[in-house]
Figure 1 (cartoon, rainbow, N blue to C red):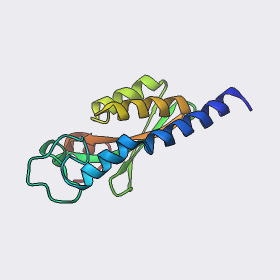
Figure 2: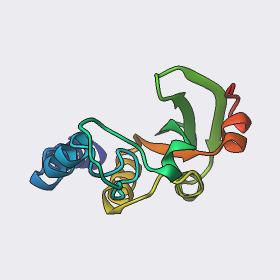
Figure 3: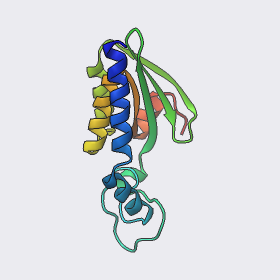
Amino acid sequence: MNEKALQFIVNKNDRSARAGSFAQRIVGRIVCAGEICSSCRSPLPPPHTPGPKRCAFCAEKRLVRMTFRECYGWRCRFWTEDWKKLPAELIFTDSAKVREVARRGNGLIDKWDRDGLELDLEIGRGGVWLRLNDEQYLALGGVL
């Protein structure tokens, strides 16, 4: 087994262990209770009604999933919240540009997002949720 394949297996196991961590489960319960924003994890004002809710900042943003993979450069594709593909596809020569797109698209809200992005870049494929304004969404070919 070569070094890259072994690193892929180890990173995938690390990622699944992190996804099932105790802290993530607690955050999921608080989101379902309606106490924090389901997108950026900021506290929501009372009264707290059950179910995922968004804060005022995230309510005006559009959730877009950016998936990327390393194949003759970094190929980035974009998907809407209901998994419909947007027409834009970007190709970058280095991973720094992928990090920049994630940063500008408000995709790196907390430590889990940043660590997950770095791990995905090491593996060579992955994705991150972006919170785009209307102008950014239209630039990717989305329809309002």
